[in-house]
Image 1 (cartoon, rainbow, N blue to C red):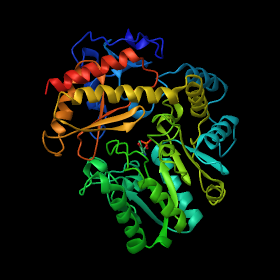
Image 2: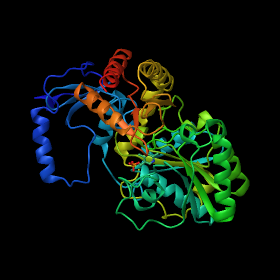
Image 3: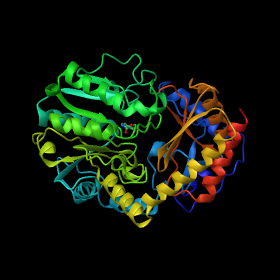
Image 4: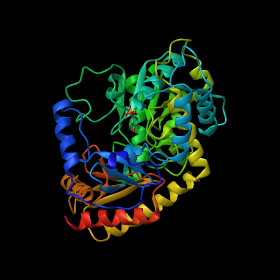
Length: 450
Ligand SMILES: *Cc1c(COP(=O)(O)O)cnc(C)c1O
């Protein structure tokens, strides 16, 4: 019965638990799943979705959860948002695929024009479209190598850039992303991230010392003239919503410019209004040479982009870039719906308001517990790093217990962090104030139940 539900904002906006979690239909699907799917595919929640929209997701047993994850920062405008559904549906009925490399079409160009306009910097830009975040990052490296004639790529501790061979190599964390999957791609170098909370000599020295390590790696160990690009998330996502110490990214950007090294901002998680700006690098006042986007770009349809300086993007020869499905017309139509939703709904501002409400709720929770080491993030991308009381030792168990409490009580949450000790909150920007408050009441009970 629930499988015929229509999603989107018309879905009743309430938390409602009608069965044990998981309910009987979800348990049935879990059994079918383990007989049909391999073990390497893991899911955070044990329930299966039937419909979603606004700020809720309804499972196949009729339980309605408040969504604080947005499918990992993807449904920023909400699931089945009206403009996305309308435009993608109309596009489905016109044509589903011709392959842009074979017979091109207008929606692709319109997405590119929009990203060229919205991304930081008034310079001449070009955009190429892909299917996934990994593919966008991988192609940004290809552009950087083609434009510079250099091969080395510099990334940071705690980085996540994807799961393909090159991007898995660029990703920092062994478990679960790399373990057993090597050998890895060559010419990837890693510098420390300016992670204030865990900087050995304290947050006040973090930007300067992290920059010194980075500069020494490039100049003394690799050789600046061998480095094609530095790839950095302006706020690290899977790494635990690490906001680099103020000034660090500006120093890196300046250093790269002086040496002809291209700066790639991986905004796959932070981009498209999530952080209370169209792009997170705006908060640091940096203008990257290339920007990758994906997650929030098309409201859940697979679409990714590299937007960058025209001279860099034009360095790759005709036919060197692309893919069968890259820039699929239905996904492009959905992206145009996302831009429309963000502009008409003033969602950049809404992300800021949601962020303030989440920080206030978490600070209030922190006053009554000693496991919150730090609250951080920007806009609707906020995290709490949990520690063993009185120390900075990562508290993975507390994260597991609170996540479980939330899932059993109708709130979908996600975790993150190299040490698995970060609760991250990424609500859709279509969530109501009431639901957000209610969700954090459940989170608060989770902390109280420790
Ligand atoms: C999710 C993510 C990726 C990978 O995107 P996929 O679509 O899963 O390939 C790359 N970079 C960042 C910053 C991400 O958050």
